[in-house]
Image (cartoon, rainbow, N blue to C red; front, top):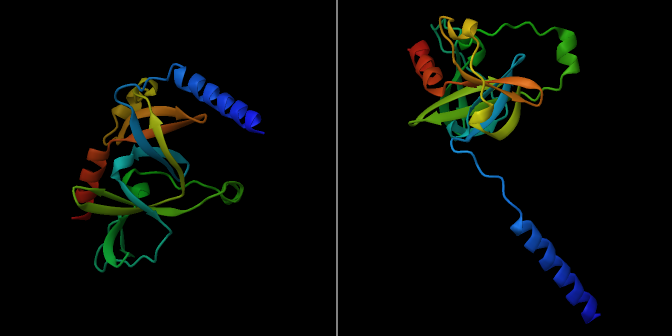
Length: 182
């Protein structure tokens, strides 16, 4: 029995020696960790370090005398009142999901809390896929028609699971959110 144990240990050591000796995939400088999420039919990504947490949808309380489609209202996040904003409105996304498409697609509505420089924003999303590392070599340039738009929040595009994902310019996005709720 001891021999079998030693043989298994030797096999284990051999296997790990081989794994450790294999050439590792080198990390490309500039690799970005992003959170991929969906709003309406569009997939977006933002740098992962912005995200504080993902929460289940909370009751929304409107702000009196504010008629701003971007500012949805305020919500309670762990006892703190936070502004809840609509990226759908800010990004001017069309709401053209038909009822049939809604039934066919699994949706897991969530709210995302982002934090940058101690400023927190909460916004609803239709689906969250997760955090992914994206190599800059797969970034595609934004098409000229989009780049010349009055306000474009897309910094780069990249392919993920056969879908085009827009990497949003987080600096511009948060700046516009601040401006739109003042």
